[in-house]
Length: 244
Ligand SMILES: Nc1nc2c(ncn2[C@@H]2O[C@H](COP(=O)(O)OP(=O)(O)OP(=O)(O)O)[C@@H](O)[C@H]2O)c(=O)[nH]1
Ligand SMILES: O=C(O)[C@H](O)COP(=O)(O)O
Image: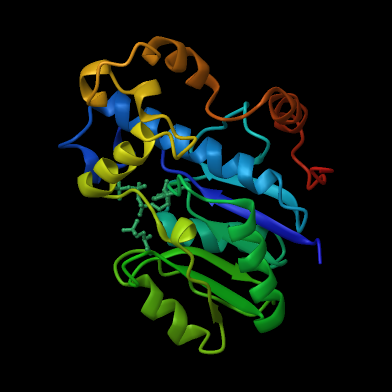
């Protein structure tokens, strides 16, 4: 089935990734949040089962291949409920923007499970939070993102599939998560090049390729094709298919 909409909520500005405030400067937190979100958007844009992609955020990001749903400041869960209603309670994937290792296969597996069970949840790697919710049916659902959200989500949908995958479960919330991401980045095992937007002294190594990667990262990981597509979609307020 290819009738899924995907919705990525994004906090912007200096409050982005506030739990990293002891590890990163505000501009660095915003750059990290934006790089991770760009990667999530790019990944979602490659999933055939998704025919519309939305970003729920206070301001539009024209470079991304998504429609903008303005966040009016009501808080994450009420905003998501409003967005789901606005989208007509259609099959909806809500997925967080802070998943640097997300793969197309992760999303395909999650949506296939939701097609089978009506609903699927992706826990965070601690088994307490929820990194993604896929709801196929139009029945009421109260988003409960926040502490121990998985329990609350499961109580509402006991028959939901639980999809546990390492790449889907890794979100970047704490300085320890960030340190892990930086390690992986240094080993070249992720497309999120922390060295590309963190100052050299925060990279943890003296890297001659640092400056080149900094300019490379300016547009996140959105390639030229996707940039063109983003421009095309930045101007549509309707539910046009991404046509991917
Ligand atoms: N649109 C919108 N997105 C939000 C809001 N709060 C959190 N998010 C997004 O929801 C997802 C999960 O966010 P959290 O990890 O709980 O919060 P965060 O803002 O990323 O980080 P912290 O400030 O450290 O809690 C991320 O994609 C956030 O950008 C909100 O009020 N509005
Ligand atoms: O429900 C959740 O898991 C929260 O919205 C996000 O939790 P975390 O970002 O603290 O994992």
